[in-house]
Length: 127
Image (tube, rainbow, N blue to C red):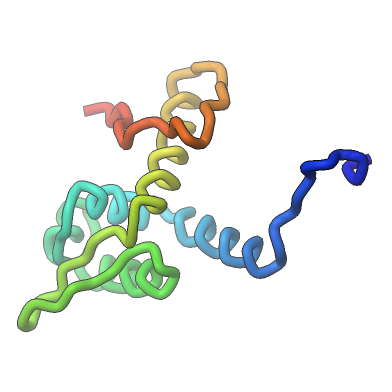
């Protein structure tokens, strides 16, 4: 059936694996908080721990995994490491996930905005 579609295309196995790994890493609430904070600007472990309401050890472990997955990057300055989101793709990925969650939370019927018009990284936070 799908073979009759002229523009049908499937991602290759490596793309599927890498995307699944990124989604797996984003399935943790603390990691989402960490990434959201990093999308607001560069930060260190102590500040991220406070923002994510987690211990610095926990945040360091999450950051190590996010860094290995290419979702965050670190910049060393003396004995401190300052982290930031890897790129604009991370912002769009997280913003889309939070946008979707916000619409579900508010009971708004799902819509399908074009990829080129992804919503800005603003989400109702409940505060």
